[in-house]
Amino acid sequence: MSTLTTTPKGAARPKRGAPHHTRRVEPVYYLFLLPSLVLFTLAIPVPAIIGIFFSFTNSIGIGDWELVGLVNYVAAFSDPAIWQSYLFTFGFSLVTVLVVNVAAFLLAVGLTSRIRLKVSLRAVFVIPMVVSGIIIAYVFNFLFSNSLPAAGTSLGIPFLSTSLLANPDLAWVAIVAVTAWQAVPGALLIYIAGLLAIPGDVYEAAEIDGASRAQRLTRITLPLMAGYVVINVILGFKNFLNAYDIIVGLTNGGPGTSTRSVAMTIITGFNSGDYAYQMANATIFFVVAVLIAFLQLSVTRGRNTL
Image (cartoon, rainbow, N blue to C red; front, side, top):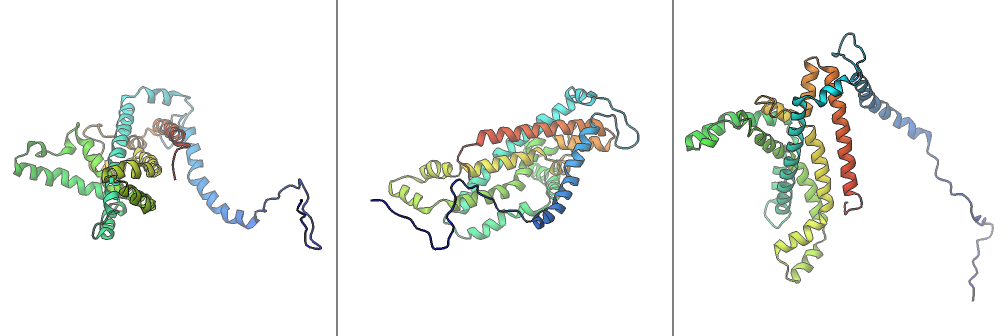
């Protein structure tokens, strides 16, 4: 028995194979987009293209210049100071990403549990995120240079009697601690959002099955939070590669050049007349950052993200 379909009287039957027409974009939308597009182009792509061009010259930032080809790039690859800045920047970024994510995740678990004043505590823990990095650096500079050595001397602790910032082997520890102190709140908010998105029924079922708190954390919470971990790792690593203000406020790249980041090396070179040379360094750093971004995307593609 076949079923007959009818159309209302006067209604046109749809034609088979007729192309599907998308909705036409109104010209006024492009008019509103144009100012932002122009400002973005003038602020980012145009200066970047100009900078890449000058990396092939001997310009000092002003005055006459000449094309010198790949001389600046060859010199950058053979410069120990630049290699040192890259090693410090990547080592610092990896350690700080680990510290920030572990601390933020543990705090998020605590601040979403059944404790009193958890809303007020959340507000307290996000305060460092809204304070300027350079201000934080100067405050901690005073603490590391004066308060902590004084406390170490009075308590008879030789390790704390001298400033960490003056020790070329330990100054990076102070930078990691201060950077993590400011970066934890941002990661904390993302982890809190992820924990609150997990249905409570999942934990109730696991509790009924006899799962302990540690088992619920490792077998339920962590797998379901994998997407949020990926986001925090990518955002954190990107931000820490550009570390500048906290390092300037704490050590100014010292002792010597032991804590000088790539960004600090580039900006210092601009101010000292090595414009074209450091522009080549900036171009290399841009290419490295793009390659890292593609690597992160390829690793996380197809996994359980948001």
